[in-house]
Image 1 (cartoon, rainbow, N blue to C red):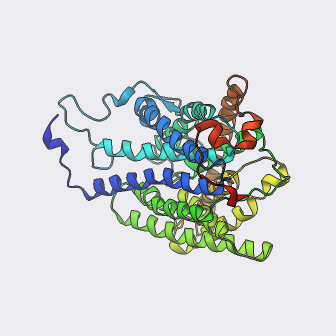
Image 2: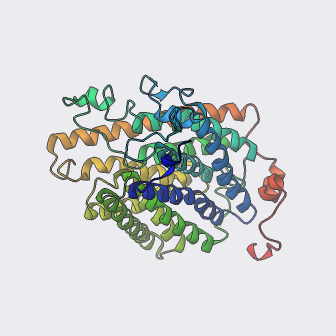
Image 3: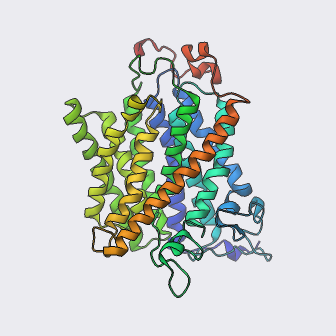
Length: 439
């Protein structure tokens, strides 16, 4: 390998490497967040599900994930050839050993690492719907199939030049025409993953909650988080990591990255406010769990729009997202599906809101409510269609995988093990030597 190809003085490259590290941190942060929300008998299992997702997805991504998502041999704009860059063959270096450049001016290997972390967190998010009751082996198998059948195709469709992108032959060009270069006249917007990450994961969580069934005592006993300081710490680290998630999606240390960072910060704070206002009106008190959940709801809401709003619009977006999710988490009680840790109420609802709302508030006169007129209305419609397509794909593939596992390996642990605690039954460990104070 040419030693000169190892040298990079690019500030953009440095920022994306830092951003990749921040996004990678989000998965153990999610483990803390979900672990604290779980019961004291399932905290280790919940954290292991996040870590297990990271292990499975990382290996698959190197083998076929990058190729399926960003390869040039596309199959109908839905996914790319898994074997074009199998094991990253011909993706990182040229024949002379020099590092291949990416689309953003720095070596493409940096982009590969950055996108890998997105795939990990997307899968890990889903496990929050399955607390206390599923086999660890079944979860790992599900993750492997889901990332291949749902995440990689969506990444290709939205970010890899596929049917939900702005490229030639996409839905946007078919509906609203293209410019002289063949790109969509009205390009869809998913800045950092409202469609690819949050809508897909939230939909999967809903389907799994229905297929797997509810926990013992669901709707009969109060199931509270066992460690709220852990929840707050997890939320804080997620917030920190989200700076790389959104601002890193500018793919450079640029003014756009600065705007995305600022919008992310303001939307998160507004999300806290929106959630706590709902709590204060509905429950007469503002809770730490509500504040932590509001942070995440605000962050999810701004994710698809972080580079396309003004900070004032970001505040409005985050506040509404926080309020919607605060109301939305109660849907599981009304419709009797056990989304244990509110993946549907937070990630699906706020992801849908952010994806559609960018069609309303997009800056530069592009949004329906920001001076875009008829073209703004077209953007709003396009965002809505993309969200529906992502939900349909995730729902269909998740249902197929979930039913396959249900009728082969099986999802549920033994009822007696569920009663005594999944941590010891599945992992031979317990988080606490003396759990009497949790009873």
